[in-house]
Length: 222
Image (cartoon, rainbow, N blue to C red; front, top):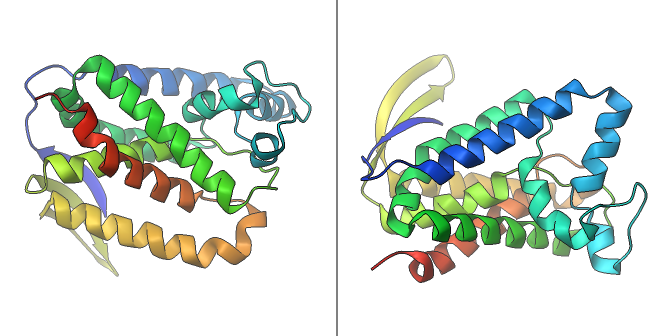
């Protein structure tokens, strides 16, 4: 299922959501402009490396922000066009309404915390991994968790693929996000025996989502 938009107009311009999309896009364009070997170095300098977090060491190349500062910087890196396109689409569809409910600064803090905790979930599952963890999906998973709590009845206009059939349907947000979460959970279980191979950080998605559900009521405006 691919979300196209939600039928849930917000009351104010989603300035922070737009800013996050712009920053991620600019960083990604900078990445792709680098020669392959320099891009690899750049990603390792600002990505989360679970081994570094657990053992408190900095594996070369040195991290300008320290391994712990990378818990924030990793959220703005992406590995491919499809990676950033998917993440930014989800952020655009779900982020504006959550930002509207929380306010600009609160939403930015909420988003960042969800991203940090998401990374720590992945680190705890595979603490000795030296595979770089990058992407905004952990933080965006937190936004989905908040959306499910705040707008369970909102309609999500969705592109649905079923074998050779493609259709556009309206799905209640709670149902849409429940299906999304079930897919993340199932994928995480199947990935346990293949963590050393890298790939999608499913546990980061779960960690970010749970964090969003827990924290949303602390950050929403009365």
